[in-house]
Structure formats: structure tokens, C-alpha cells
Length: 475
Length: 111
Image (cartoon, rainbow over all chains, first blue to last red; front, side):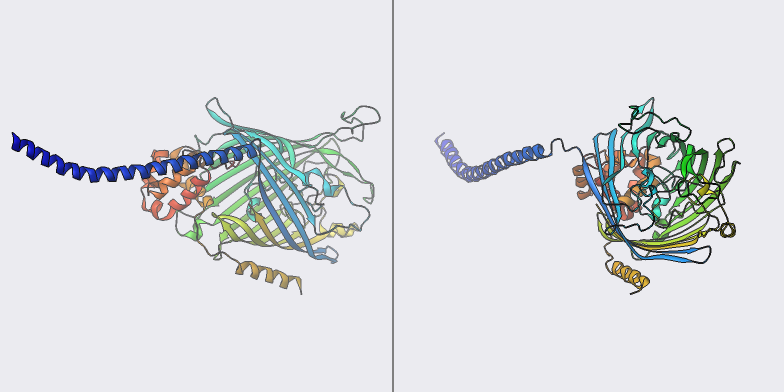
């Protein structure tokens, strides 16, 4: 018994010695951990305080901004039907797009854009008075005006899911410039319309139904826009502020309704179609001899337009990186005038059809940029709404003749794969077969061949060239 | 100096400033998703990316589990996410894309 007790005591003594070391180590570790926890708790308190300050500062900041600032150099050359040459060898301009947006929920977005576009310094027009067309609402941010910030876009977009389908609804000053395909040479994301036929700022509505779950990329979109509001001014002397003018010389509201149908888009192959009708399109009514310096603007009738455009992004299935990044596209469009009664429209009382086709490609180059080539041709009565196209010499898509273009877009600084600072060199050559490309719908839009124009005592532009270089910051 | 010489100099300046880094690209990732996964998964890239927050996607990438997490988000794409092409060619672009449009990225969807 004594031996057992003695052995037991010896074992306890030995083990307690061993455990004593372990206990001491554990105690030291616990103390160290407690100190760490205490430090972390203090850090957590400081972080919470900082977060509260950040929340206070950013509360009710319900908008996010982005910047797109571009400086361009353009060399413009014009040659007229009689062989006269006109040029501007150094047109420098600055363009700012101040983008803004916010998404308070996953189904509601607000987007807007303020902009200015101006030539360097004051733009002094030495001809007889500045025209009102330069600051027309459809092109007020695409023409060179001044550095007043103007609203280029402002709209809400609601994306509800209802009746088992995905819808979009939007009202405001819509993203109606730089649309499908024309966005490639402008190095922009494609906005709502088809660039072959519509490229102008407008206020209106759009609604679409997304059918991608049935056919890849399919959707149908209805667009309604008002290009001109007929209304008297505020503080009208009659007291009838903002009533619709109703005289023989007053204009009607100019409206546009369009239907976009995208039958297919699987990310590589895409097809897009559009039909629109523009009501009460306007033009200048000149005197019989066409030499009036005081034309009267009036409504001439309606016009229909349509386009079908296809694009292939990536040739083949992963043949090589060059073909993977190559884009080719083709587009066909048509317009038809619908004159009022016996009123001449584009110089004709008949319904005149105009057509245009457009081919292009964009390829990656060895410098990490993109190289593009485009060609389009328009017929005698071809008439789109592409006033806001970013081409100083006039819309190439509206050319009643042939247009050729080559460009090289080069990212210089990239962040996370996104081009933050880039450069582009672009050459555009327009060869007009007829006059009146992109003119309004009255007498000025009448297509005359170069010979007919010369015989009528006119000297219209026959060839126009633009060599542009720009540097662009976007973030 | 003639105008064309000025243009040539501008081109040379631009060319000389060309970045030479080869980096992953969210825009390429979006295209990869559209071509390879959208039809298979049955929802848009924005929906796919928003299935996890940025920390979730980042953690998966660091742990080498990006393919597994993407399969979880789109089970129908499992074959693609297990392929050599995904591992060797597409994973970095797709990661950039999902990271950019993750549920807490704050990025406003394009419309």
C-alpha cells in the first residue's frame, strides 16, 4: 500500500512537473491571444468609426460620374463641282462627355450625359450671320458650338420581369447616337439605334421585350420620339403660352416611330433589323428661283426608313487570335418619301425610294490596337437621319455617292483591360454623285447630279476629305 | 510643317507610347461568356457575375477554385469550366469580367 502510494506520489510529482511546463506554455499563449483579441477589438472599433464617417459623407450621393475627354485635329479638304478647292488645314477641337448614372435597385437605372464640343478658342463665323442649324437640338452636342455643358442624354430605364418575360421601359433624352455598327469606327459601345439610318439626339420613349430565352439575343423594341415640338413661347403676347401653333405657316410636331427587331445574337453572329416612319419632316421652302435668303421652314410630308444589318465578331471557331478578334459586317438600308398631297419633297411629288449599302471590317493589329476599313454607297434619293454622326465633313452614311474610310485606333494606357487613354488616326473620303445629302426635306434636299447643279448655276461640294487625329481620355 | 507630317509625328508618338503588357480583359471575358456560356447557362453575363460578390470570386481564384465556383453558378457549363481551354486561355478574362460585375462591384449595367 505504502509502495503504491509512494509510486503514485512519484508519478504525480513527475507528471505535474511535465504538465506544469505545458500549462505555463498554454498560459503564455492564452495571454498572447488575449492581447491580440484586445488589439483586434480596438481596431474594429476604429474601423466602425471610420465607416460611419464615410457613410455620413456619401449618404444621398446618388450619382456616379465618368469622364470621356477628347482632343481632335482635323484636316478638311473640299473640292467643288467647278473645281474650286476649300480647306481647313488645322481644325482643333475639344469634346467632353460627363457621364453619370446610378442604379438604386437591380431593375432601375438612371443614366445621363452632359457634353460640350467646341473648336479651340472662339469660333468666329465671318459669313452672313450664324445659322440656327449649328445648334439644332438633334446635333447640339455633335457640332462645334461652345463650352456650355448641354444635356446629351438623360433617361431612366426600368427592367421589370412580368408575365414570365423580361421587359425594358425608358423615357427621356435617349442614347440615340453612335448606334449599331457606326460605333466601331468611333470606338464606342453601341447605343440604341442602328447607325446606318438613325444617329441623332432625340427625346422620347422606348420599350422592349427580351426573348433571349427562346432564341439567343432576340428582342423587339418600340421607339417613339419627338424631334420637333410645335408650341408658342412662354410669355406669348396672346397669353396662350405653349399652345400648339395653328397657322398656315406653322409647323406640326415632328414625330418618329420605329421598331427594332433583333432576330439573333449569340455573341459571334448577330442580325438586326429596323423600320421607322418619321411624320411631318421639315424643310425650307425657297423661292421659285431657289435664291431666297429668307427661306420658310415647313412640313413636307412623312418618310419611311428600314435597315437590315449583320455582323460577325470572330471568324471561325478559335482558329487563331487574329481571326478571333476580327469583325466583319454588312448592312442594307432604304428610305421612301411620302410627300404631302402635291407638295414636292426632296424635289419630287412622287414617292421616291433611296437605297444604301455598307460594308466594313475591323481587325486587331500587332500594336494591340484596331485597324478598320469601311465603304458605303447611297443612291440618288437616299435619306437617313444621321445628322449627329461624328464626321466633320458631313455624315458619311448619308452620302448620295460613295464613302471610303480607314482608321487605326490605338490604346496607349490600359487599366484592367480597359482603354483609359487612346489615340485614333482616321481618313474619310466622300465622293458625291448628287447634291442634297443630309439636307432638309425641302428644296435643299433635291438631288441634282454634279452636271445638273453646275447647269443651274450652283457649285456644290463634289469631293470631301477629312484626316483626323485624336487623343482621348476615358475613365 | 505640312499637315501630313504633323499627323505622321502624332502617329509615331502614339506608336511609341504603346503599352506592351498582355493583360486579362473584362471586355474579352464578356465576349467569352456570350459566345461560350450564355446559351448553355440560360442567363446573361450580368446575372452570372452577380451570383457572387467580389471577395467570393477573388477567394476562389486565389484558392484555384474559380472553375468550381463558376460551375456552381452555372452547372450546365461544367464541361467548359473543366476544359484545358478554360484553364489555359479563358479563366483570367472571365475572372476579370465577373469581378467587374460582381454583386457588390457598384458597376452600373450597360443598357
